[in-house]
Image (tube, rainbow, N blue to C red):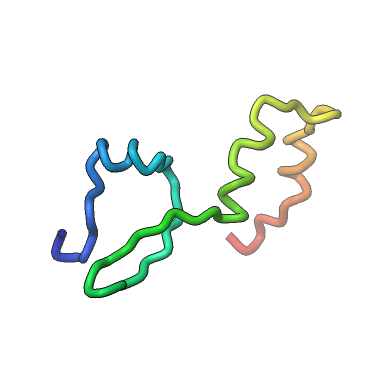
Length: 73
């Protein structure tokens, strides 16, 4: 455990628990033991969902850049 209270999980344990990065965990204390339980994050479960999909129409980045108001920068 580091000075910032971070804990490293060895690869063997991560594989046995079938953990993937990033993973959200629930932390509990039971009978003096710390229990980490992987949970499904609704946001993280959507990660990669659109990977490889192309937009239906081409995006005109010049038009988008011209629309942005840069006067406050």
